[in-house]
Each structure stands twice: as C-alpha cells, then as structure tokens.
Image (cartoon, rainbow, N blue to C red; front, side):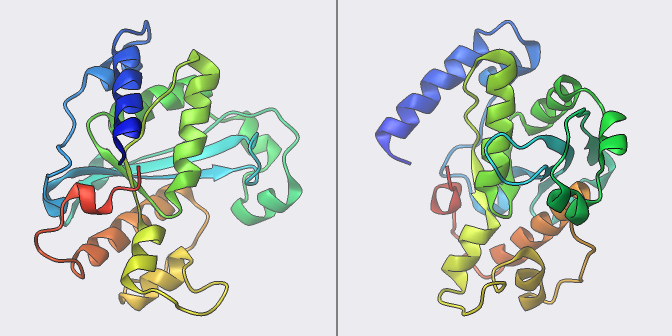
Length: 223
C-alpha cells in the first residue's frame, strides 16, 4: 500500500471513529492487525454477496460471511442473510442465484444487515474471490447510507491464485470452483453467499500452504 493510500485510509478511519453511527465508530476505533503480522496468524472474515448483476448500481440481495483464523473456521459465528429489495431484478442474475423478487421482498433491511456485517468485520481482514466486488459493494452501501468512506482491508483469493499459478489458459480457469479443484477441495453448489464465503476461506487456507512460512499481511493484502 502506498503512503498516499495509507494516509487516506487513516483519515477515513478517524472520520468513522468520530461518526454518529455506533457500528462504524467501533470499526474506526478498532485495533487492526499490523501489516507485519504473519498471514497464518491474522484474523479474517470470508465474505460473499449475491448481487442483482455486476453493474455499479446492482442491488445487494444476500450476504454470507464467516470469521476464521489459521486453519479454523468459526462456523458457529457464520451468518447468511437475505437483503430486502423491492426492485425489479435482473432476470439473468435471478436465474444464476435464484433470489427472485418475492424472496427479496422478504429479506432483512439493508441497514440491519450492514450493522451485523460491519460488527463481524471489525478488526478483521476481508477474504473473498474477486474481492474488489465485495469491497466495492460494501463500501458503496455504507456510503449511500451514511455518507462516509469505509476503508476495507482485504485479501483476494483470485489475485493470489494468479500469483501462485500464473499464465493458466482458459476463460474459466481462475473461477472459484476450478481454483478449488486444483487444491483438491470439494465441489460446492455455487451462488449461495454463505457457501461461497466458506469456499473462499477454505481456498485461502489451502493457498497459504503454498506460500513461504514467513509471509505477512503486507505481502498478500490487496488493499
């Protein structure tokens, strides 16, 4: 991370700490792992969103997450929440994730989901496959509701896989399921937020076994 990026994040954390929103204030005041922390010892939160497509204004429809450290997934603290939406949803996206308008209308209010998610992410490094999607979606939702910038420290298993196994050929070769298969991990049914979050966490744990023992957060953090 550049000095400019670090300065911007420090300012954003201070703004959150002084905010009137309790969960964001706690997030801004939290103790975060040092960049020199060994990657195998850091606290993480695997996260996945199901979205109404990948356009910038796509609706959040489901969030799934689980905290973990090292090789231990805290599945007793995992969460899977549908997110309320009354919008006319993209038909292609509905076909993929199966969350239609009737189900979306019964979801939890987005502000309640964000409160739970921000509390779970506080002090932890987010892990996701194609993490820029989750980072952008979460930061955008927080900004829309609070007007504040939420810095999100994260590791991207897709980016890490391109480093570990570069120059693989094929349009699908770096997708989550195909990447897991290279590590002998089981096949899961895709497009459920919690299942995909667990899948990303397990993949990251497998990837760590291919990295040097001394690898630190600063070596692998995307942002």
